[in-house]
View 1 (cartoon, rainbow, N blue to C red):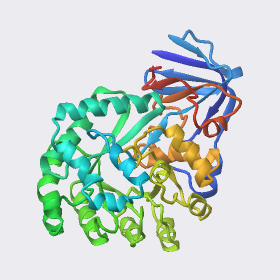
View 2: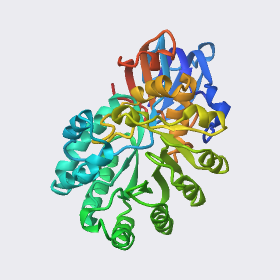
View 3: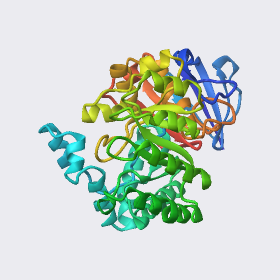
View 4: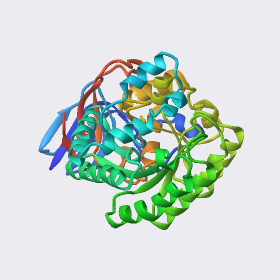
Length: 412
């Protein structure tokens, strides 16, 4: 099956030689081709170039992209889209002045979602989560990481991870599963942290490994949640089961968690609304990708990740949606891109790099996703006619996507 896209106004993220990630000043460079073509064979990018070099072939499908931008699908490396119900009451509580911590202390937050999930059947969890997955596909996401963490029981966590595995089987989008049993301490373990961590390590992890349900492991390393030492126990247990770490850290406080993550070769550190000079130094010596979640900052009115400081210090940065019911009830990566430009002062080039090639790195899939490179997955966004790709973050409230291609197939 061949699909040929012709007369592309501008083809973005064109990389002859695939790169794992871009860092520092490299993030400001977004390689593009104007008046371009792109050839897809089955599910892979077969060729691309300028129109004067377009091959004379009878493709099964030809798309005329005159005036349109073509770019790799978004790679959203941090979501929690498998959940039940919502937390709209907490949204109103925050408007009325309650903080995230105060809501959590009243039994809201993660524990609220955990109660709803444990009361639901696996089928109901799947049916609700499937709708969210369909939504983000239409919004241009072509690869997504999905976490557990709203079970906080052996059976609850297994239910979530089984749902993620079923979604991956039933949809063409690339999905990576992350085990986040260490999302919060259940009420019965509030005064017995070691007891819950033992449950994670001795009961949850062996069953998850037996069913091959996760690619990564995560923990919420934060004041009032999992301490640095507790997070290290989780990371070390994950390593024993072949699960590299992707850690929530520095959302509200800096407690030296980033250095611990680097020490354990974490793939990513996510949130980073609070970042110290020491954190930056630790990251500069590592292969760990910092991940910013601007929709969360927007929704619960907390500081934004200091992107300029980090990029100017030579670090890479990825962008992700943090789609979850409590602090970021949206997986719209187009909004993430715009918010990063508007509120974090990232340039459009930096933001697109952060949401494509660096997002792919943050999921461990940069060899196959995140750029227009021969042999990579044909996961693409075709926009409506635009003046330039600057319109993607500029027109933040508009749907600028005309067509989606996943695994070489036209979906919309």
